[in-house]
Structures are given as structure tokens and as C-alpha cells.
Image (cartoon, rainbow, N blue to C red):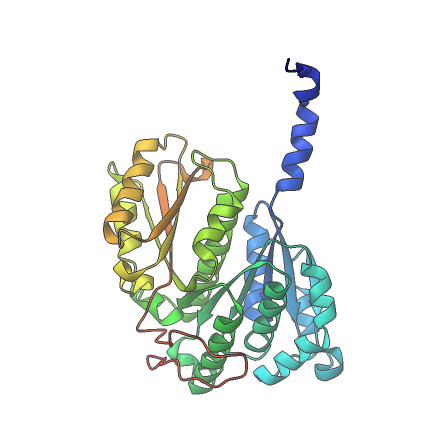
Amino acid sequence: MQKAVSSETKAVTTEELEQILQRAKARIIAVGCGGAGCNTISRMMGVGIRGAQTIAINTDAQDLLYTTADRKILIGKDITGGLGAGNDPERGEAAAREDEAVIKDHIYGADLVFVTCGLGGGTGTGSAPVVAEIAKKLGALTVSVVTLPFTVEGTRRRRNAEMGLARLRAVSDTVVVIPNDKLMQLAPDLPIGAAFKVSDQLLIDAIKGITEMITVPGLINLDFADIRTVLKNGGVAMIGIGESDVANRSEEAVEEALNSPLLDVDIAGAKGALVNIVGSPDLTLEEAQKVVAKVAEALDPEAHIIWGAQISQEMKNSLRVMIVLSGVHSPYVAGVEKPAKPGEPIDLGLGYL
């Protein structure tokens, strides 16, 4: 005869459930490297990001002083004296190596690490691959979110960016690439100062959007395992963003995202897609499903699509769609199938810069 199990033994309290959920939460860290990366972190702190810690890393003590972040790390004090890397990626890398143990201590235990910088300078270009390498060795899903320099920034920054991107590809699960020159197609009359701010905002949108798909309760929720499915070994990724407040806002927003100049890739060749839908309180499940169906039509039937939908009071009557396509081949990042090992020179074909 089977022994009855006491209902008291099986039952769990609300407090116990909350403790279990707290332990199960993914630990997410966003790390900004160099001047542009630290600017992104500061602005992200200003708009707010739920469920992620922020770390600012720099060789410039003054710049770091005015950066807003949960934690700050001044790297390479013996090498740079707190005066910056002088647009020299080798000095930026050496500075990060000098404080590798400190960086490791701060990101230890993370499940997902975002590494963000503007490629082309010294500190960000040199230190970001070191941070990504540490994160991946610690077992974190490592997603680098970077910009490529504007043409007007010159040949030296182009070459620095080529090197930095090659090294990041070698040590990241996914590298989300935002070519700054493509911003000119979005707003050709934008002053250069404003263009840099837009570039920063795109970095924020990518990191905040992916993070809050996991951490913010919504109409359709995702967990960390869903995100890992698309971004683990995702290669090069690019983003498209669209927003609309018209009657057929779901159709217009997704069309705008899919046709974004930032997504100048063969969409059909993407291996995976993360679709983040954020709408006003009247967002319906039908609207969200229309967005996902349109994305599915554009992709290969074998592509893995993960999507989430959230409600935001700030959206008023609008609906925003962010699409992250992984495993893409872009004429603006014409790299090889297998990225080089760290330190190995490679021509990434960034001829547009």
C-alpha cells in the first residue's frame, strides 16, 4: 500500500517561492569601457535599467570621476597615470591586463555580461576584448555591443576599430555592431554632436532592451535560457528599431525596424532573432503576434525566433519594435566565417570607413 504524502510536506509558502525566484534570477552586468562606453553607462543610469548592475572602466581618472555607474574601475594606473590611453589600443589593453584580477572580481558570478564601447579609440578598443575574454572564461554569456566610427573620425580610428572588432569577435558569444555612418541615413541633417548622442542611445536601447526582456514582467515574458539560445555563439548581430503611433502601429513599427538602415544585411540569412515589443497599456496580444509573424516571414524558416512583449506607461499610444538579428553577414562587417584569435591581424573589409 502506497504511503500518503502529507500536503504540508509538499506545500511551499509565498516567502519560500520568493526566495527560490531570487536565487534563480540571472545576474546581469553591463560594462562600459573607455570614454564612449562610460558615456553609455552614465546615460543608461539616467534613464534606468531594471535588473542589471553597471560598471564603468577607464584609464582617464577625470572622465571616470564624472561617470555615473554602480561601480567604477580605474585601470592601468602604473601605465597611464590616470591620464588616458592616448588613442593607443595597445596601452588600453595593457592597462586592462594590469588590473585583470580586479575586473575578474567585479564580474565573477555573472550569468550575462554586456561589454560596450565605441571602437576606434585607445581605452575602449584595447580593454573591451580583455573584459569580454574574462567574462567568457568565467562562464558568462558574453555580448559585446559596439559602434564603428564615423568616416569623419579618420583612418587611424578605422584601423583601430578593425583590430578591436576582430578581437571582440574572438572572445564574445555575440557582437552587436552599430555602424555610425549608417546613422546618417536615418537623419542626414543631424549635427555631428547630436549624431554621437543618437549612437549612444542605440547602445542603450540594445542593452536595456535585451536585459528587460528577462527582468521586467510583461505581456510575454522570457527567461535567461531563451536569450542564451539565440545569443550563445551568435557571431555578428545587428539591430533594427521601429516605432509607430498610427492605427496600424504594429505593421508600421515592424516594417520600419526590418527596413532600418542599421540592418543593412541579408535578413533572410540570419540564424536567430530577438524581438522586443514595447507598447502602451492598450497593447494587445494580437498586435504582438502580428509583429512576430512579419519577422518570421522575412527570415529563413530554420531561424530561431525569441520574442517578448512589455507594457510601458511612457509609450502613451505608441508601439516600439527592436529586432536583434544574430549570425548575419553584413557588407559593413565583411569578416571571415571564423574570427581571428586575439592579437591575430585580419582584414575585416571595413572599406566604407
